[in-house]
Length: 261
Ligand SMILES: [Fe+2]
Ligand SMILES: [Fe+2]
Image (cartoon, rainbow, N blue to C red; front, side, top):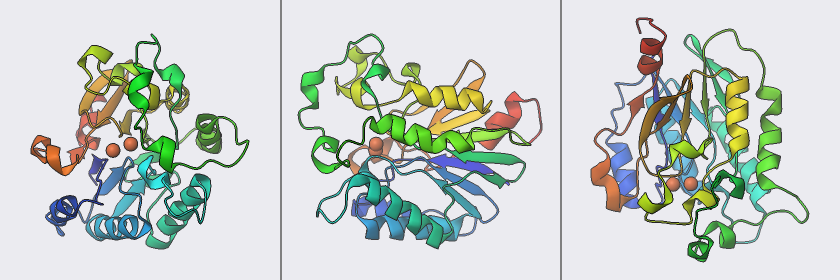
């Protein structure tokens, strides 16, 4: 079984739905896919996309991103939307709980960003004025830190597993996974990108590789013994950056461990 990574499918764009449908229906039937969030905000599109993926892969693991938690019609808040997305996954056989995939354990980690991810306080807060989460995410009254809420949900998953562990989250666990502010076109991004508490959970799990999403800046590097991989599907305007829609993570990990895949 091979294990592939993808994120940020943004299939609310028809161009991305068309690109997704070009993915082989035969080649991955024995494989697993880790989807690190940002499929869409419309439940019908999320459902369509997960069904498309589920029909192509033996197993699909997934964590919702920020776009999934947008609420536009006021019939629920973002936490209720999160629960609805997890419920949909259960119906479709998409895994949001830890599970085996071949000789690996895959542990999905839920998350939200915190401002302390911007370690050097170099981000430009004024550029966040149009940040859509601030308009479309509705948090329950007095819920406290959103990041802490999601990290707490992960706590029962932080345990020993009898095999190499692969983790996935939408948000970024370490500052090094994002370029310095002067190289970013969106100077406020470090304030809405990651959660350092996530990396503590990855380290406690002794993860071999971590798949993340959100930044749309491709990344694949080993830092202090963990391979961090971001392989975005991108918005249509950046589709030319996608040389291959999927990235195999299992082979990288096997190579590092000196094993033959
Ligand atoms: Fe995204
Ligand atoms: Fe995102």
